[in-house]
Image (cartoon, rainbow, N blue to C red; front, side):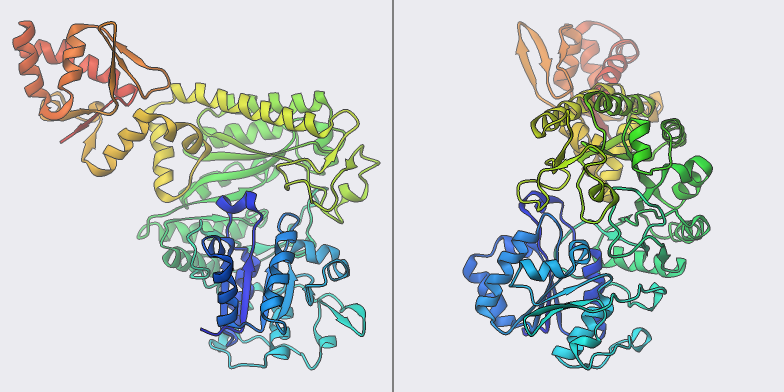
Length: 593
């Protein structure tokens, strides 16, 4: 099939497993599609299993007139390589790039990379649509409700476009920001045909001024879709993606509180007939001032919230312009934990301005303190400071005690490998401290998970069913054999817990052990828990052997009574129930009807 436009999200190798299609690129694809163009959205996953010859054939057969890429500090070299390969096959194709890096570097992108014909600065919907209408020709709009007017008699008319003319690189005046996002057609979430988590942006921009953050695409203001549009998009998106969860990824979804509350009200209504949960971004200062907001979000389906805590040292937080205090962080984490059943995902930055061994220790200790205050629910992401071009930190790096060691991101991997160092912390030290930090945090998570009540473990497995994989689930709980098998049995069988049924009904339950036993000096060494469970008592060994899923507890009691000359009632009350309750606590046995 022939296509007018390919729009490609090409990741670096390190992000293959967590890649999602860029939402800005998806919006552009949807605008072009509604404007009559045949658009194909592609991701790295689409190319991964193709041979080189098959990739070349894909471009030959589709013969797009324009190929667009979203570029960032990690994928720029991969994009340049693919662009060169495409040019060999389709010499007349136009290559256009956009995204944060393109918007920051402007003319410098075309100066450095000859394989790129155009660069789009700022929000790309109107710029790329104008370029398509100029180079390909205007086509009939499908849904005229979202018809977008553009002017494109020549390249000089297209705002926000960087291009070459007579050996010079020209940067047209930046296109104004789209003030009313509701004029854009709804995103087509069937593009691309790759299964990824459903991410949604309900607005653009950020009203805050964190010193490390780049807002070259969407600027510092906050513009947003109307509440009803947001909810319609979310419902359609979940239907198209065949999922019952989503994540709202606006830098600060709750910046406009009354709007967030109206969206929650509409989502709460939808939950009466549609089963879903979601995650979103939040700010510590917002929830410190408005602690009741967490109740509203929870009723709408919130089960995970992400906070940018960034550091455990107040002076560094102030340099970042976070406008929060460590005490506020503790209070908000405590409030969310007390509410219950909401994972608190935190972001921390290492290797930033004025960072020392002491400030690193401040951050490590603070994160562990928060984990203690919200056991089973506090989680974190840890990365290194990335000196994005044009940010306050990058422009003042030397003054802030930073040395940028990889300003072209050739050796580093954004947030995973240091791009800058401080006078007392070199690259190897930072890497070593990060690994130790994460190991210590996970070790403490494991210790906490040993003691978690069933209800909390159940929360994490239930969230996973919806597609929200918490750190507790993916890094600890799902790796414990007895727990993992217990939930697999539960998925396929009508299981119950002993505490949920009466003594009369308990007798009619069947029971099945979840893991294997190893005979050790006459004892049963039952594996699969954090530590092996030792069963040495002959009566308990007898009961464990009969937990094969073939007998009811009444039948087991009858066999037990005959073997040990004990009444059936005493067998159940004094031996069977106490032993099975012990096994149930470690998920070594499952009961079913």
